[in-house]
Amino acid sequence: MSISRDDILQIATLAKLSVEESELPELTKDMAQMIAFADAINAVSTEASDFDNINGLVNVMREDVVEPSFSRDDILKNAESQDDGFFLVKKRS
Image 1 (cartoon, rainbow, N blue to C red):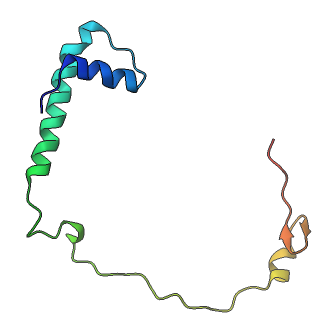
Image 2 (image 1 turned 180 degrees about the vertical axis):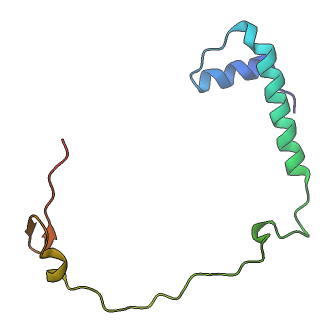
């Protein structure tokens, strides 16, 4: 895919950027290089590869187990202020 001066101007407009006329050749060249790089990455076949698990890791998460915890009263006993079993906090201004 080739990128034109008009493409750069349209992208700049969408991004709400101001682009000087003197910057257009360099921006066009840079964008063409980025697109060529993306095309090269897209051309790589991933059929026989396992890119999503290059380290061979398996699920390392533990099972969820319900365990005893602190009671609500124990948690709220040091609260500066509380109401109906909830912490009361100051509203941010």
